[in-house]
Length: 339
Image (cartoon, rainbow, N blue to C red; front, side, top):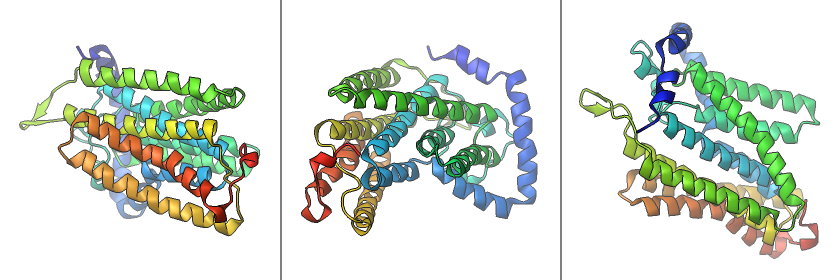
């Protein structure tokens, strides 16, 4: 039995109607000023997609601070893990399913084919950009700008008609919670020689248990319109497996790196660090585009679509740092390890 009580609560008419009315209000404004603001919010909403937060984490991790970059990568991974679990648990439909009056911006629905609650873009932006704001909290102006950016990302999901206010609020609150959780866990792990290993053991066990539940025990609503499923559970499960594989890859890679071969992200002059980040960016974009397309579109079994993104994540947070830390002109010195 799927979570019928949660679905009924989140989709209750008296609860959802004011939210739909608000979306219709925004939609009316959007119809009058579609060209300018649609382009703006389509650009802003990309900050919550998987590739841009990953790039932000990677550049910080490779070229600014390995410790703080590890925290950002853990936030990226935690956001995927938490968000996908609750999406599959709640099984709440998109706004245009809840009301046929809602007409989303078509190009914004590319990453909005699955369940709606909570908003993954809002959660990811709040986690990674909010985490960056926390790291830069002593630079007040930057922190305020980053927090405002998070709120704009959340609002963009409403403007584009792909989420309800409850989705966005839940995503933002999840991200905020993860910022403090990740910083607490990373600081604890840094104080204990095997802290990262203990933390990894707990994360891996919980993540695998959640994934097994989603794949084999959770049941999903199967509602049809014109002979087509509103949400294809098989595709939703496939997407979840990919997210979990990638999340565990980046988290395991970053944590194992900190434990066994901590590298100095500040090694070398500024030119060297820029080159390192540029080369890594090309690698990251290739890994995030090609293998993921194979996972989504290919006829691979669940084990393979978990393994591919897992290896991708390990390559980004462990493989590439291990390579560049051993290259002579990039200079590696273990005595600088804890930067």
